[in-house]
Structures are given as C-alpha cells and as structure tokens.
Amino acid sequence: DLKKKINDESMRIKITGAVEEKLMPYYISSMDVYVSPSINEGFGLSILNAMSAGKPVIAYNTTAIPELVDDKNGILVEPNDIKTLSDSILYLIENDKEREKLGKNGMEKSMKYSWDKSIEEIIKIYNLFL
Image 1 (cartoon, rainbow, N blue to C red):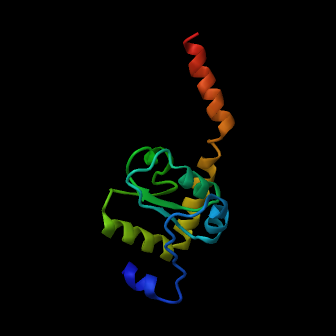
Image 2 (cartoon, helix red, strand yellow; image 1 turned 120 degrees about the vertical axis):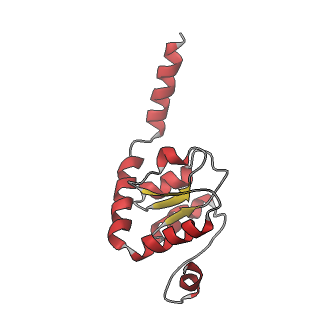
Image 3 (cartoon, rainbow, N blue to C red; image 1 turned 30 degrees about the vertical axis):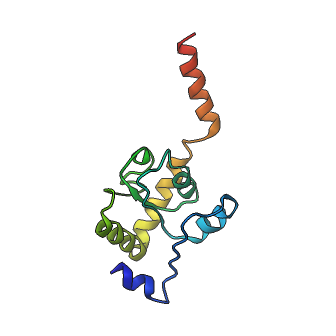
C-alpha cells in the first residue's frame, strides 16, 4: 500500500505542501508523477506546468481540472477518495510505460495553452459585442 511505499527508503517520495513559485521548475523536473489533491483549484496552472514538463497528473475531478486532465494524460479521482488516489499513485509509480505515455500526451495537450492564445480568444469574444 502507499503508506508502505512512502516509508520505503528506496522510494523518493516527498510531500512538500506549498512551494515557492521560483522553486517549482526544480521540483517538477525531479518528479515522476504530479499529484494535485486540491478540492478548491481554479484553472490549475500548476497542473498545466507539470503537463508541459511531461509529467502525468493525478488530480481531483473538480472545478476546471477536467478541462486539463483526462484519461489520455492523467488520472482524475473523485474528491476525497483517498483509496483511489493512493491506488492511482502506486499504479503510475509501478507502470513506467503508462506513466511515460500519459506524460507525453499531457505535454502535447499543454501546448494548446498560452497567454497569446488566451488573448486572441478574449479579443474574439470582445469583437462579438462591438
């Protein structure tokens, strides 16, 4: 089970809590799986950052998260379903090919998002009302 894996010294699991923005690239580059068990997430910029680094994402199926994470690039878990959350973490830790596939797909999906594209969309909407 996950608790045994966390306590296993051969595993390198680090539960960080909040991380300073300037340290995020370091943390993301060193991880195998990005887990975001937030029930109050906005758009999910940290999730998008992990996806752009090719990391598969496990997140709660809430707020705007399903717009980013789907079964092609990560795993969505119902909020507060700790058993499924821990099973999903173990699954990706133990399945290199699946982890790599989801990470690659996430990286590809993340390329659809940029500030330039967001501005273009806002201008299109704005022009509809002119």
